[in-house]
Length: 595
Image (cartoon, rainbow, N blue to C red; front, side, top):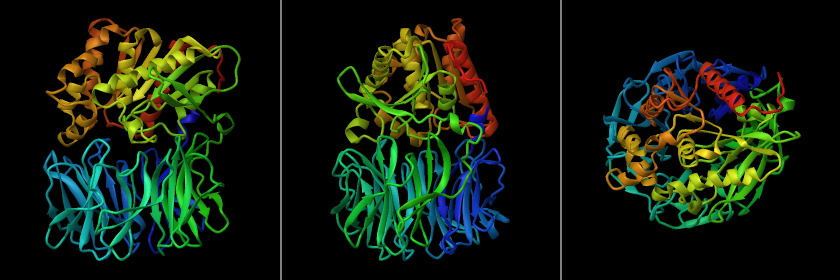
């Protein structure tokens, strides 16, 4: 299936001193670190680890790299030091039962910071490690989730983030000599703070936050006081990422406009900003300044599966650097989705992407629900969407209430006992679609991953007559059992969104798909990863066992070497081929293009 063989380059980082582009890609079937060789105009593999690389970071001197690798998708990263462009590999951590999160290199390139729950499953403490000797020390204890995100330029302090709710966080400054931590004054009230950029003096910085607004703004601040000076705020949309240039003259940033990224540049000297016009529409991540007045970033769109691009600040033009995400055999078949909206039960306008090719007659529909729920379906390459669209389906991907990208008010519309309002959005979406001449209302399927899997199960149980088929991938079948069995540190944050054990048990019982599974009329296909540390595999097993005991049409596939995400190419192909064949079998489009 050609749609599934398309690779991408992502998580771009520029090597200090050399200006070299590095990124992750699955060219070998599993994510590894690669670099772009300018001389040969080709990608060269840097890491050759036995499992997927999750994260990496280059030292300021440019000669050392730390990579994080997990085991069979369990997200419990262990760190390795790469030198000599990957030729030498040295283990830095050896606690496979624990989580580790990389927090960056010290300015002197001798130490790294990371967080880990080594002391207690619920507690993430901060550590500093000498990469040459391998010796590490605990520098701060915390009862909850905290992660280092930046060193002070003088190396005497760390800024770390504490996740306070499902979406909100606060920033703290840790003095590495006294081991005392103080909350930054700008974090005076509950808000989101991301994409921190410190100035060379270590006293000021730039931050993306919604502290004073419904949407995220790019602001300047001082570590000494609570004032935020707003530089860029687009009232309707979120600023997502920001990057300060090495000479501190420019700030690059991205705007999330309805699921598509727009690149922007702010001149600190001129105190004005502009949006780039000559960049393909899609999703931009990993902003990095290069020499010759260039910005580098990873870009992916529905028709551009994912590559590294550059933008000339002087010429104001963009150029594709890598050709990893080239869909040669299917490029002319790829569909650019339309951005549409519908009105839900209470008049709320809900956006969705619609993938469809020109055709006559009525077509079956597959509705895809994203996870999170504090996430967003974006304008990027989705192989199953593209394949189904070319097989005569219409694919609809909504951002129901609770999704990110539309402001704080929108993302909180599904919290706790408002949970089923988001499920009702799906019912009203079907109502809207059924009124279209191009849609077969008797052939509508639904699929979703993680929280989206819960949405699938909730839709099938609470609106059983609307659906002809369903696919649940690592989904939640009962919030009570999910909260009881998920990681201890994760439970506290998820309760803010879903409800609290003890306090909301009656509501959990009322809405649980597990308790209403007898109502499911549509055939159901369920997938899960054995090593899922977010949504335990028991969520799938208990639901499927209940339905099978009743003789309902349900099947379960558990990937033994995966976790919450399907990372290995062979499993990725198995998963998506099974899904497409399932929908072809049960929704039966009248038209399809044979490959």
